[in-house]
Length: 106
Image (cartoon, rainbow, N blue to C red):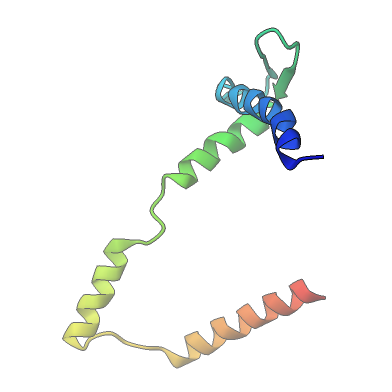
């Protein structure tokens, strides 16, 4: 059996699922939202909570990964020699990170 035949069998299903995702509108209440795809009889049901999570996901995705304003501020402090390093704060955060990692491993 060729792999191409498997991919061609999966392809149309994947496409209809992606098209269904695009047809779902965000909802802010606790009502249930149903969207039917054309002719297939498939129905997608989202609760208000799921719609809120989707909206939050879009908002988070639009946030910048790096706070450039903070980066520039720190650069200026380093350049001017006024940047203060607190070794106790750094050590405390390192211990917290290690503790969190160890909890995840057990």
